[in-house]
Image (tube, rainbow over all chains, first blue to last red; front, side, top):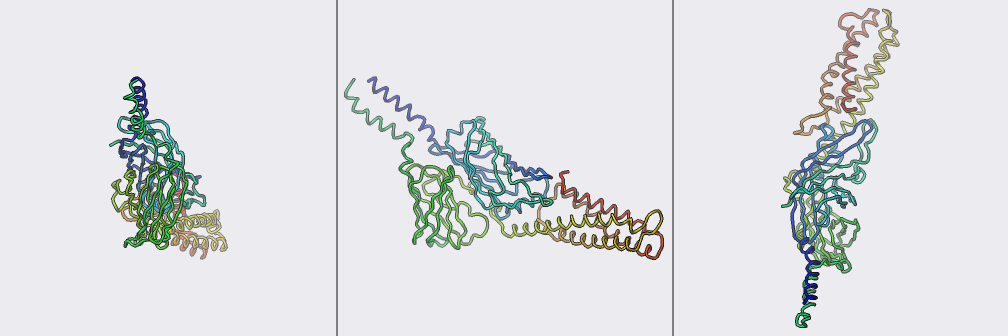
Length: 182
Length: 297
């Protein structure tokens, strides 16, 4: 009897975490600040957008996230520069930036994680592996902070020039998002 | 130990272990299959189907058969980008999440009428409900649809403004040269300048005026983007045009009068003596306009 009880308890202990992680959940992007950085010998430009929307679905222990932001929503404080940016990145033809990622549901408990991102931008798709992010749980919300090491060449964008000097190939995007579980 | 309970042990173990993480699933592989049709429902044969793991970037390809059917097997669990490419159709893209060992169907539609923007996700993963889609995010349709005409307008605008920028730099250089030769035109210490000096200054001034007109044309004729409120250093750049525009005209008129007076051996008098002042004010306004968009103010 004692042996049977022990086997039963061991099986239960093995199974419970799996049952817990298999629960479905949905996440919605509550607020976001996305900032791109462009470097030129004469200028350093930052463009900011707060218009991203996103959704995450967790099922069978795997969470799939999609975040999208309109290209036109990025503002640098200079209308002329913003219009040129939209032209250079083909933002009228491909108006959305979309970022997809998948991760184990257990990653959402917080801490530093590394995720693989698939980014659709300017009519191209680029993959970025092991991008570090910091997850800070705040009750039913999670704050996600990190920086995506995007480059102009990854999306086949011709770098704009000023006085015959092109911008730097690196255009990192800082991410500060708050996701809420539904 | 009671033997009556012992015979239930295997059943109990199987019951609980069936919920365990399928560690061995990776070796059996998942299968993704489906049919590719066009907007009329006709099958699309020989379409290239590429599937790429979002995690690892590894990809597998196949082609649809005569009935538009495709199948990819031995796939590991995870999320995949699925791309369908066929001649005469824009690329169709979708995403799917494969569970370990599962068999899933993803039918794709190649829409021949769609000509703008990247192919947004339009596949129907019939057995995967775990992928959020762009349409579920609630963006207005006008924000997610590409506009090739607007892109062409932006391209034209940028092209013309780039010519404006380059011509502007050449104009500034020519203006500096004209200013540098002004001494030879009017002379020093009350003495008139030489005819050669006057002619050189006049030629440089006339060239500057011609280049200025061309520079202004490309700025004024560049397409405007409706609904855009002008913000930033470009406002100062545009405001300076109200000074250097009329300034160029006045400088040219006063310069012609000054040239005539000096050529007749007269001293500069009347309104013609303000030619240099007008030129300096015009040059200062033009220089400010250039600096406003070159350096961060």
